[in-house]
Length: 182
Image (cartoon, rainbow, N blue to C red; front, side, top):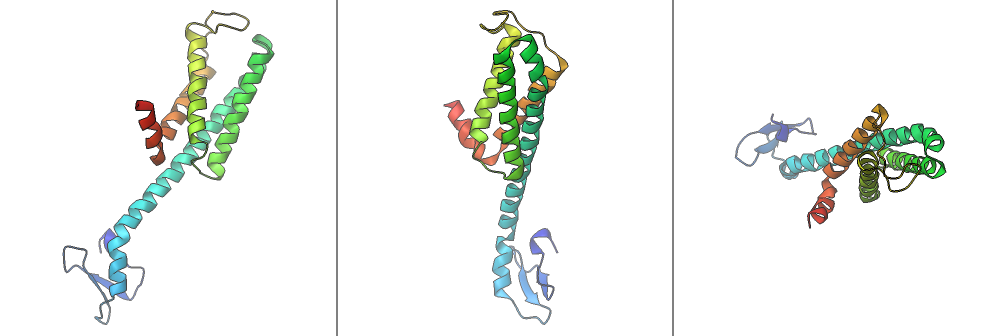
């Protein structure tokens, strides 16, 4: 039997008799028309199930990445409180908490709801990081002076960029990608 001829009913045998997938007969030789129709749809049903499964897996990967990014922001928050002040520390706590909440949401109940907000928020965080490391932020304890790059920064941004890639790989993200091109 080929993959499209798998029978859920053990009393059925598949015979290849035509180009459309064959006829399906009981072991006694009687043809079962109900089964024939189901088998013709089977390849499409498997394809839809595979897409749903892949989509669910992508949501879970996105959830894991968001949780990791959130943990990194929570990890570096105390240093930001000490070195840059209250506003920077609070910013790290808020970003970390938001990433954790979104990550858990993706892990618990894969849904499209927070995808667009997560993409926009992650893009803003990455852009803010790039400005802080290239030209320096126009505010804060050292306005206009670029900050150094640490290993934790690289891991954080790599995680967030991978998160963006995964979110944009989701099947329904085509709308978001097409809007961005216009």
